[in-house]
Image 1: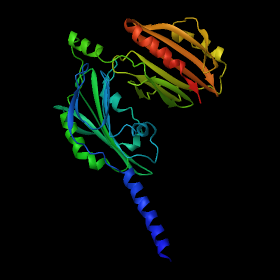
Image 2: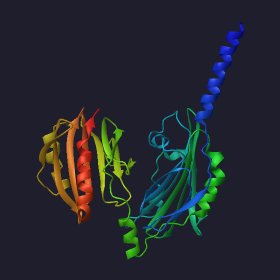
Image 3: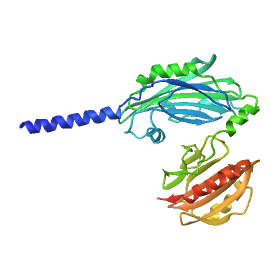
Image 4: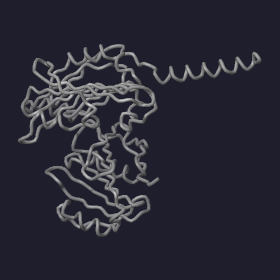
Length: 339
């Protein structure tokens, strides 16, 4: 074999090693700071050099990078290795307990270890571990449940792709030891002031692509994928200022019933039997309802069928700040297009 051939093979090996090295690149934790939720009182230390998402009164997340966030939504078998820290506060409906929260799992039940008892913020809690192989290595996680308020469960999870969990384990344990659990405080002026001072929706919109569509949303909004009964996929776009102001897109299978007029008529009762108004979405026939689902909150809900899928597009806004939200949300909805 010629020297050129050996050089070629060596170059290929180097490229493979470099590529693998980039995929398994570790985002080191440089410094920790503390976040305290202004509504539910929980607090947690987090890496200041990670990508942070805050939802007052609900949850706090930290990701190694902004680009790895998408993989935590899709769980692609190959991709960027990275880690996530999440703290979620869950207000219990009447009659439910911490057991009902622990029973809800993101992955199949057999993926999880049996619960073991741990101590968090001075109270007894529960821990479970889970892992499964992906194309770039083992995905691994730990999830913790605890409550110091009988009406609230705090759920903490640590996860990492690409076999990198053990690298972060010591830091994860340090962060866990820093946590103060969520509780329902007495509502006072200070709490109200902190929530109101969060920024309103930005008029600068950026495009986000979902399943079969694209939409532009305020650049200071975050994206979630909640579980909605019967929906193929759901998207929620929300900012920090108010939890009752958001845009939602729920996608349903319409292969068996694609008659939009009948679908709209069948759903009138869900919108207090208000009369639907005709419109169009992305050039396609649509209807919308406008009503008030709860006191001080207004909603506009669009229904449109495309490619045997029903798209339900909802914008909710606080009536007391309608001038801040409604124009931006209307602008956002006008950018919706099918792909």
